[in-house]
Picture 1: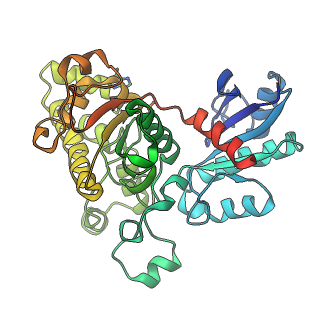
Picture 2: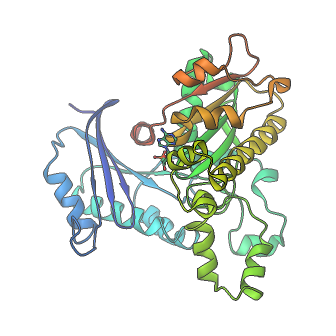
Length: 369
Ligand code: AMP
């Protein structure tokens, strides 16, 4: 055993891990409520110590860390040293909820496994290939530069993996095909992939804009923020909470789980029916926009909790697009087959199971080569 990679995904109060032997998952687990009374561990160091003590780490080639924000600096998986840690720390203002925890995971792992290379794999990196015209916001260029305001995009690990799997399904090299990847989970984003490279994505400087999510609003007129503050008297923190934690499906229905919304919609609940319609309409807007950006489209792939499991969402999101060469076969869709478009469709519609941990393990190995 010489090709083991441990993948760590450190959240603010949790530590997810998965150990791979080559591409085979050996074991995985989750430490929860870190630092909370009655939680599994007092801090990230204690959590990782507990995890490591239970694992056979012989032949460990690397530890791969999920890091949410890599800013403009990190465009590829990166072997961690002091300078990388400092750079991830400097990016904290851009991802205040995620980067501190990701960094804690890295620092603890460096301390406990000093002889094993640590590799940071960034959610933003896959989108580094977006053209400036897509990445730039139309605001004062000096303000944007000073505060590093631009579109970065997230879910890059998933979009990279899914677009490659899609190429496999089509039996063609990634470099030859154009794909729209739809990651519809609790967080959700769309990505236009040309020849294996991201050319547009729906999240922005933060993971808030774009598609409707479990608790995030997705796209909204920024003037809503001024209005709620000046006229509604809400504080900036209250508005942040409203859009990030109380928005999306939860804002529209009180629940963030698509399964509950589908059940309520079936039972005739109007709020749930509207939430469903808002959700699929937003997906369709991005599909249309990205079709135009790409000019030529080979495949659309659905992935993550909603995308992999909801025939109703897949069918509604692509309904009425036959004129654009996009169609869903109802039987294949209901069975959740990996290809759900009718035979000989100009655009192949796929359902792909995403595996971000496996992709992180692969990228960690790649960074060491
Ligand atoms: P993820 O973030 O990829 O784990 O996706 C989680 C979300 O997927 C959940 O919050 C649910 O809304 C959704 N989900 C999971 N299973 C189903 C299902 N069978 N049908 C519809 N949505 C589902």
